[in-house]
Length: 287
Ligand code: ZN
Image 1 (cartoon, rainbow, N blue to C red):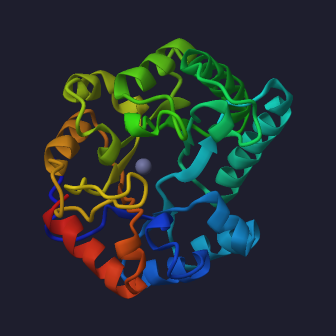
Image 2 (image 1 turned 120 degrees about the vertical axis):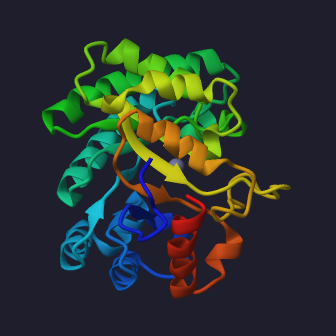
């Protein structure tokens, strides 16, 4: 496993971590100031400043990307199909413009939450079938653009409203079905927050392979967690054995960024400089 204790060369910042403290331009500048070499932007943050300005900010601040968040939300009424398809195609185009290594997919849950306005459903089996179809269709477009897609399994608590792909095994099964020849265009984004509890985690990471290990996200699981969406912990403040998971991921050959992704009212209330300073320090001690 790589030694992160001496520097933060492999730290990437998911820009949602400081989304309340400034726009994407300000975040890019702050990263450069703190010696952070990579970011993973969210689409809404890019849209807020304009894609061209975001591309310029990446270039001006000499940043790389570790991903682009996010495509997906494939589940919805049949009448929404073109909207879902086109939305995801735009996401691929934006990722290409920004120079992202992959688009991270949050696949969607039940239709009424994945695409609000869709007819309510309790059929998660059907939702999962729609996810397969949606990824399959997006993959055709992504291939033309040479933009890999990384499926992010989400903790089961999000199965209804955000993602009905909930384990690493499930995500890898989709990769096997839709990209059996392992073309390098479909893989997984593994986020310790979502996968740490899984008794099958280590065996599934061992199954992943370097070609499908596209992104690695870190934060921590606080006890108690008071808000399943917006109470993520800073690495070292919770109960996840982050180093053990990183060791397993790197044993597969992964040598990319450890992307810090923290949605937290507590951290959003602190200054950008303060948060980035703590991120850098914890990356060296707790990741
Ligand atoms: Zn994540």
